[in-house]
Amino acid sequence: MTSHPTVPAPPSHREIASGIWWIQELGPERPGVSRTIAERGDPWYAAAPRAPLHIPQNAYLLVGDRTLLFDTLSPAATGHILSELGTLLGGRPLDYLVVSHPDVPHAGNTHAILRAHEGARLVAPRYGDTHALYHLGDCQLVGEGDEIDLGGGLVAQFHEATFLDAALSVWMSERSSGCLFPVDWLGAPIRPTEAVRFADELEGGFVESDRYYEFHARVMFWFQYVDTARVATEIERLWQRHRPRMLAPSHGPVVRSDTESVFRAMPEVVRRIRETGRTGVL
Image 1 (cartoon, one colour):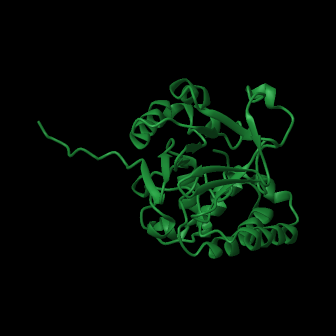
Image 2 (spheres, rainbow, N blue to C red):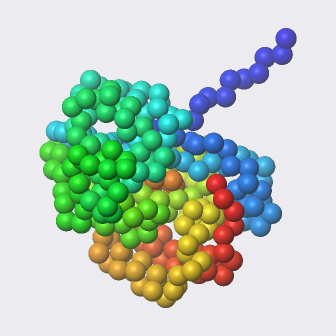
Image 3 (cartoon, rainbow, N blue to C red):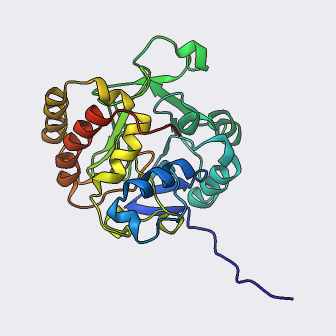
C-alpha cells in the first residue's frame, strides 16, 4: 500500500502584538476567485495559477486584566473558535464579546460563545435601528468615542465604520498597539500556505493591490457607483486621523508594517472597481 505524507493543518492563531491574538478560519475554497485571477494574469498568482484560494475569516482576542473577543468567525467554525478561546484564555473568563455587525462570518457564533462563557458581556454597534431583530436589544452599545479599558495596558476604542456593508456596524482600534480593526475593509484572498501570515510574509509580496481589488470588487462592489475623488479624500482623512501602526481586517492578512502604503493603494483599487464593476460573487 502506498502511503501518502500527512499534510499539516494550517495554523489558526498567532499573537500579533502583546496581548492581541489573531484567530483565523480559512474559509471555503473559492474556485471562482482563483479562475478570475488566473485569467486576468495577476503577477502574484502567476507562479502557481492552480493553487486554491480562500477568503479568510478573522477574529481577534485581546487579553489584558480583562478579555475581549472581536467578532466570532462563522458557524462552520463553532468548534474551532470555542477550542481556540479555551486554549488562549487558559481557563480565564471571557469578559466582552464584541460583534462588529450581525453578518454570519462576524456574529454567527455569538450564542455558542455566550453559552460557553456565561459571564461575557455582549457588545454591539450603537448605529442603526434594528438591534431587536438580531437579539441585540440588551447589549452594551458602542460607537465613536466609546472605550473599554481592559487593563494591562490594553484599551479598546470604537469608531464609526467608514466603509461598511451594513448600517449596524462598528470599527475598533487598540490604543497601545496602534492597531486598527477595519472589519470588511482590506479583505484579500490568500492561499492555504498563507494562513495567519502577515502581509509582508505573503508569497509575491505586499501591498498587493490586485488582491485588494478582487475582494472589494466582489464584496464592496458598491464602489462602482461612488465619487472616486471623494472616496480618496475619505481614505486620506482616515489615515490622518488614525495613522495605525497595524491593520487587522476581518477577511485579509494583518499588516504590521508600512501601513501607509495600504492607504495609498486603496484609491486606485476603488478607481478600478468604478471602471470595471463587480468581478463576481463569493
